[in-house]
Picture (cartoon, rainbow over the protein chains, first blue to last red):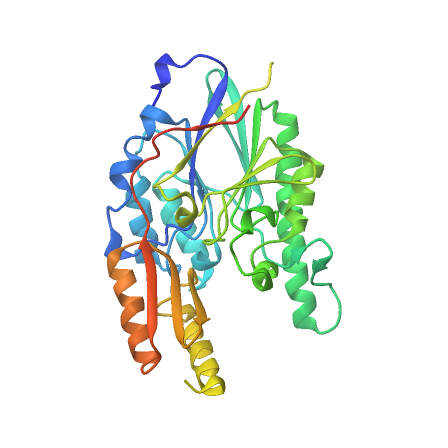
Amino acid sequence: MTPGAERDGAFVRVAAVGDIHLSPDCRGLLRPSFETLPLCADVLLLAGDLTRHGTVPEAEVVAEEVRDLGVPVVAVLGNHDYHSEREADVTRVLTDAGVTVLEGDRVVLPVAGRKVGVAGAKGFCGGFAGRSAGEFGEREMKDFVRTARRGAESLHRALADMSADGCAARIALTHFAPVPDTLAGEPVEIYPFLGSYLLAEAIDEAGADLAVHGHAHLGTEHGMTAGGVRVRNVAQPVIGRAFALYHLPLAAS
Amino acid sequence: MNGGESEYRIARFRERLAREDVAELGVRVEVRGASILLTGTLPTADRRDEILRLASTELAGIPVHADLLVARADPPDRPEELS
């Protein structure tokens, strides 16, 4: 792999993984691989489901895996990280370890004298265009669909805000999938629980150069939104490595 | 196996996988003829063994074939160039 000092051409080296589902029984599992990141990456993205049940002790395991890696670490949480209803504590433990945890927010990182923006939100399920749940009927159903809509709106806001930052590369980071392409391999019947087209709509409307998600363990890595934004499913079972690595071109300034 | 009864037992096994202590949503459970096929990738060998133990209890009496992988934790050998 190319060490940072020797690379030519303007691109950002994006390492990304999701669905690592760590708990105290797998302490140190990914650390040796993560320690190679300063040699090959400018940023590590964590696409949610970092823990198994969303407990503080599990979050502490994640924190130790990524603390002081020498590259910025940017994360969104996943549904597992919400399971114990301690997501605020999970976020705090990760933040204390130097991780930027995004939920409807963005971060701008300096890379090779340029700016790289990451907008992140967990997102939610709901389904894909023409096969999705509607905001109608029982309160529970409306709440379900509204949650998906609000998640997508928060991603849209973060991406739109980023457009004023003058970023040379813009990345959308979610846990749930924005497109069905990267779900191929999952049973079609559960697609509505794996993502929402509202996320892709937000990405296409606000603009991004790469969309990274997790959640679909049995899916595939590569997809694209209707607007032509590349989508990568980095769930660890899908990429089959400690992380995937993408060289994303930086736009001419 | 009795079709009706085993279908509910398989559904219960799936629910058990998704519940509190196991929380494993990445294992696919399919009926293949008279047996059950388990596929998917787990973070560690211990987690895989846990799933197999659970299957032997919950699906006792039904032949279970498992092809469960353990996720690789090594770094990638090359990047993808997004041009």
